[in-house]
Image (cartoon, rainbow, N blue to C red; front, side, top):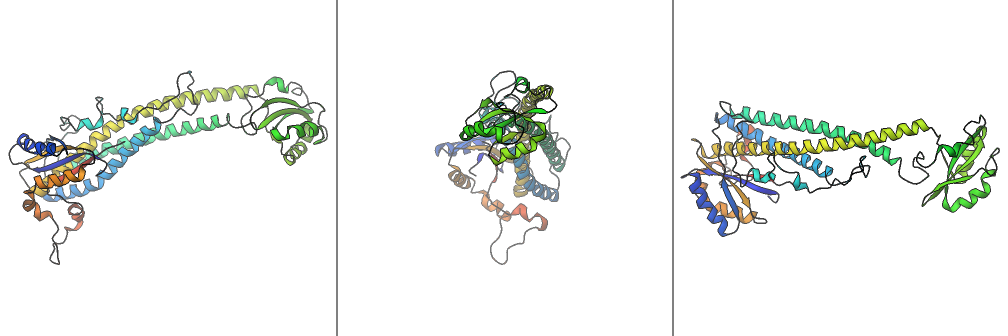
Length: 405
């Protein structure tokens, strides 16, 4: 329960929800364990015992899946808001830093922090979104889970679209980084650097990245690396921390031999041909990718915020259904229960659990039929519904609402 932010607790109704809340809260306040508010159950169409058992079984399996979808959406928001854009700056020249507090995005559609949706509330079933009138509970749950699946598919598709464009942009930007032995030379050299051989049928200008500790060796040996190297044609074009970029003129027919000699001497012959139109096209493509990535980032963050809000609200509705179904299975009909949302104080979960067990101790004998008997005469679990009756058990119904951070 270390990650539980809120507890949903349900017990039989003895008087009125308000009176039972007035009895519970002083107990919680006295020991500084937390605070509680009333959680109203809607007027569900209960159905048969068999259908409730089957529904409890399916909800037990569905709940972790819904929480996983919620967690993935939170992870998506976190990844979008804890880093800068791939390009480091927007095409418009604006700030590139996209970092912002996660909690600023984990809100419901009215702008409140997501936990405020349930506590302090007040919470009520959203009849406009999730119709329950004349609908069996299994149909209500099926509708909620279909909505989760639809949201998850939309989130996955938009995330994949963004990841594809971001990957393309990252690849394009990677060509602009690194040292002179590997980075793109489109922004390092100009057309003038090739002017001497551009119109020649026999000569070409080659670019060589020379390690800084081998510059002197290059300058004294490049003319003899191969036959047909134009004397005194070496020109320094650029340098960085590791390499110096030189150009020199050679005859086209000795290109392969010159390249081999460069490798043998640890000089790196760059495979680069200056083409002004291709360079301009590459710049245009990069600008387009930067714009597209920024737009998709904005769209994905907006969608993720909306989806988190919707998923959290659906999750709460499903937990309310679980609490109601478990209450009916434990305490029977008519469906008169006192349900409450408790906000535990930090690090007080164990003590709160003990206090609630004491406060609701009178429920033990009433719900003893739900506990597993000891010894050889223990009643066997109910076949396919065994998992409904197994696991952690308390004399009161308890479900947790997890915190996402």
